[in-house]
Image 1: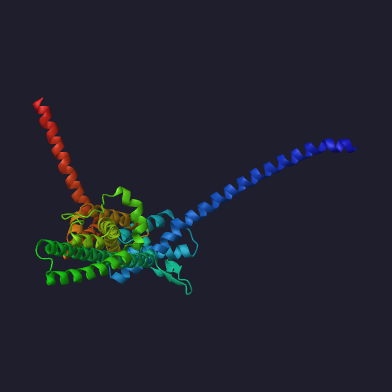
Image 2: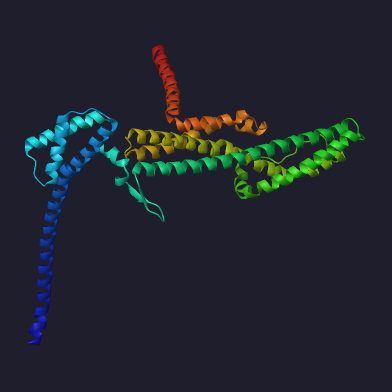
Length: 391
């Protein structure tokens, strides 16, 4: 008996598994039917109650703006709202009247929509805040987001520009002192070795150069790692231009001790840093700041006109990228050699102003690029036509 029971156990287990599987299939079918029924219920609610609730926002907007509206439209919409709230079904004629009235009202308030009215109202918004939760509209949230972004970019751009101004000033002053000191030593050699005035001036310039070298060393310390990695690929040299042999002229030997290899290396590092700030970082930051300024202006206008919708966030994000790219493109047209040769002047700020304008109005930059492309493509077409004619 026990052996028969043991033999029947596998068959019983198999039957149980099959029955369990069939039950699961039936339950899945029921869930699918329930899901379809629930989905249809939700769809019906969305196609009636949701639209009716939206009409109340539209009527409120019309009343606030003092827009004249046909009494027939108001009666149709309020009648439909009352019937829906009582749980009654609309007849086909009543539904047709409702949609006609809804269409007329939508055309009257364009480009304002139900979606845009919801996006600027706090009751349809989100709760924000760490300690004290406050409900704000979607429009206020995106405005606050880009306001904070603009402030951060502005502070970052100003800090970078202050660093750039300080580096440019120090580079220019050190170069000037170095040049003047070399000229003084050359005058001592050529004109008069015992000229007291020249020696006093040389001592003064030596003191200035020593102070500037110390400032330069402190400023360059954070850049050592980056510069040492990139130096092999840069066309920077640490050579002293010699017109007089230091072995024959002790004054020039003294000069070369002051202008040693570390000093020249620091000057190259500073020049490299200024080029990075001038050609890349500052144009990008100002392009980004221009795009943020444009977005804030557009959002404020859309909130005032009550036409902001959340789908516009995609356009704003794209605008940020395009503004950054526009600033980067402007950096291509800045001459790095001119930046190194001349000291600071207000004219140097003009490329950054152009980068800001390019970020603010990306369309201008791309229109210019389109014109350049069309000019070159037109000239190439003319060349091909002339070649074919000659053949």
